[in-house]
Image (cartoon, rainbow, N blue to C red; front, top):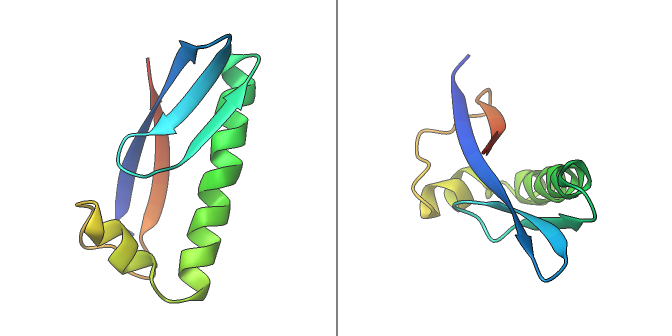
Length: 81
C-alpha cells in the first residue's frame, strides 16, 4: 500500500494555537498545541470523507500537487515542529 504524507504546522497567533495543513485550506485552533492538532485532524477527516463521498478526493489532492492517490493510498498527516 502506498502512502502520501501531508504536512501541517502549529503556530501561535492572536492568543491561540493554529494548526494548518501546508497544501490545503484546513485549520484547527485551540488553547494548546494538542487541542489545535486534534481539531485539525477532525477537519481533515471531514474533508476527506466529503471528497471521498463525491469521488473527488483524488482530484482535490491532485489540484494541490499530491498526485497518484489511489483508492488504497494511505494518507498520513504529519505535524512539523
